[in-house]
Amino acid sequence: MSNIDLDICFDARELRNALGRFATGIAVVMAQDEEGLLGVTVNSFSAVSLDPPLVSFCMARTLSSLRRLEAATSYSVNILLEHQSEISHRFSRPGTDKFANIAWEIGPSGAPRLKHIHACFECVPYAHYDGGDHVIFVGRVVHLLAEGDDRPLLFYRGRYHRLHPTPP
Image (cartoon, rainbow, N blue to C red; front, side):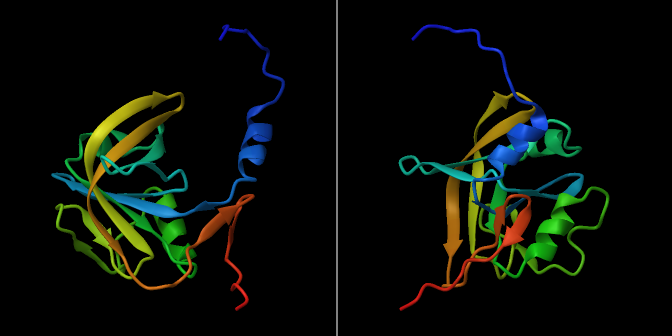
């Protein structure tokens, strides 16, 4: 392949709007270190590999707790249920006590994890990659929890959405 220099013919808002046309689930990434608990909402979660079991998510370089998350020895990726948009909002805002009145526990990996969610992937760090204005995290799944048949919280075109029931 040749390395072609093309001019970008769109701005950041146009790119964000176009990317918003891809529906995603909503997750909360959680970790704990000597400074305490940390958690942040993401919609960039993705499967990477089954063997070894790898998942990924991205974090903005402007995130105040980025350094702490990069140094974490374990973390959890918690997939939210369709009625948990308030949890998503809470963990997307800086400076709030995100863990107050939230049901959570320490998982087998040592990472904090939410209770009563769609699924949880507890991970140990596998790799970090440069992703422009983001850092790409790849975690090796060491424990998972996926129970029940409830529906996930979805994000599409800048808003939360719910899956419609499938007719029988």
